[in-house]
Image (cartoon, rainbow, N blue to C red; front, side, top):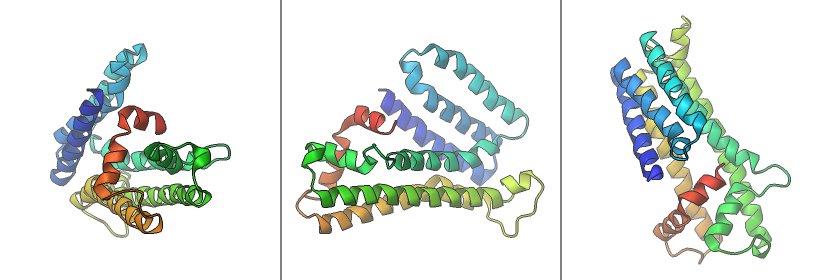
Length: 227
């Protein structure tokens, strides 16, 4: 139930953030911030964490204060950068000595075999793929930050009173940050699957079968593996 709520809130945030940027409507920006706050607090609230119940009203009040001060758009500019960097960090930290690379952990769970039974070539491949995902996400976060800086009106440089050497419209920024991000990630995901299917044939019947196996791991696995 919580996972479904988080999914709906994430979709709602994406739509509201895009409308706020495309139409330059602070009210939509406030609604997007409130949806994001509830999304981030949903799990600890469900677990009845005392700190969550105490801090959520403060977070909602901060959203309202930003709105009243005319800075409702500021968090929307920074959320895509922070989110992508956070995911890149999750991938990158698993490459540290003594840890199992994130893609290796997912592959072991999907195939249902112990780590010591995995072929060395596959271990090297999944480690390299984890590093590739880290690099792609860092580049994507950097592009998001660049677009947030040069968006006009309402971009980070514009808020500081600095003229950008070139600009994009808020709608163009929003299309890239709130929609194109997912397209690029999805394209890389699909492209890697095609490479993997050719290099290691016979492991999956189809791309749909691969997706079913990933989904079959369940929300508990994904929550734990991404922590």
